[in-house]
Length: 478
Ligand code: FRU
Image (cartoon, rainbow, N blue to C red):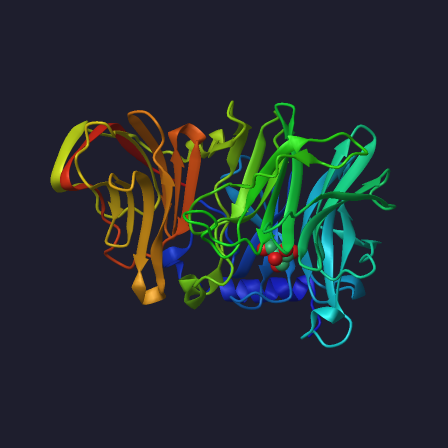
């Protein structure tokens, strides 16, 4: 099959007309139809935020990757635009893989991975990944400029370029696999076209993964953060529970030197579904991260509805005094709020306290007093499928989902924060939940699949008492 943007558009029009909306997000970005994975090319250009994404318009399964495209004035109301890239050229004939965008004068430049097999696609020995450039003046139509970096000799997995500028120099990092060691390689350029190798910026120490996908490198409070998505980390107690992780290393970097870090990899999100995050800057200097709100090889029940995959809320990241990243919803997210409904401060005793019948798009703020609680478990429930609860025996905040009919069952958790107050901002959309703990200390994000009649939202306390100190909610309107 030969691919083109026009053909992809026809297919999307046809497919989006028959989509079942029961789990389709009300206020998150998802493809019009078909498959979506990583966010790509997040950038502010010419008065708009642009979000591109890995996209397969022809089915709800991953396939030859296109770049889907949407734009927004405020990071929460998105307008779909035509597919930006299709795998049309010899350099990307098997897929336009992940990458980034930069503004170069009056031009929007996309730098992405051309994915191609020379021969049998069944073997990695035939795989070549090269870095490519496409440019646009209007931010909608892109001209392919072809390959800008070839696969280094001996490598096969070499993808996901992230580009930024420092002074007069463009830098590019790219994730690679050398034997069974994940690496990030650095390049520099004066014009986005000719690139010089600058060596290895960072590589996996023992146990830190065989491939590092989607690297990103930026400064916060004078420290350098290397954010990436490693493959091949073993689960360890409560850590690294998902198939693949996403997280960061903190350190220092001078041009011409390797990245110096203590090597402690910290996960960004503790839910079931968060991968391949990418960051970008707002015009007023905030560093925002958006991730793919899914996990590879996890069941995606929305595939039966004609679509698959969605992006997370935009999250502002800051570096805390403890040298940890904090993530809070970007302030624009509050513009989605409808009227405010306060919840009464209350003691719950072995009971369920009803909030709303049909929570489809809602933000809640709940502040619990933990010290006085005797309940073994207390928190928020959505139908029988989702619980966000304090487990007082384990001393953990847990997110438990139970959708056995879709083979999605299990718990993710974090240690309870110190102190008496547990403050939660919880965002529920038709098939997702994102929990922000104590103003950014931690975050848990998961996909959920409530069926008809399973969206009753309630507070609960089992085997004892719990105290809701304060709280309220906002229906989120489009
Ligand atoms: C990460 C990733 C990238 C790759 C893309 C392919 O989820 O595997 O490394 O570029 O997805 O769709």
